[in-house]
Image (cartoon, rainbow, N blue to C red; front, top):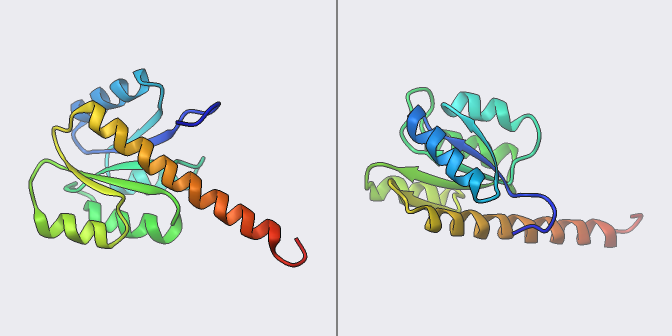
Length: 142
């Protein structure tokens, strides 16, 4: 977990009660959590202050999770995405992982397991950012 700044998480789910309850539980564990009720608002939110990890529902009425994942990975390739689904769907989970999702979890997900995945995803992003910074610093003319 980061030293001074909490991990920033965007929680995307169309089920308001689930989204708000999970957001409160994650915030109590020290994460900085913002929420979005669907794919379109999530993409709008990502255009603002940076987010470390997106926890993304697969089935939403506006844009499905796989479409949102593709757009996130195109526009914000270092942002890690953990996909959540209320339905065991092997083809969707495989497609999500093949298209850059960090992991795929089933609802209801035990909070400790989700926290571990979020921390692992944050660490992966932090390592990639450090490598990019080192490459930029060592580039000719830097």
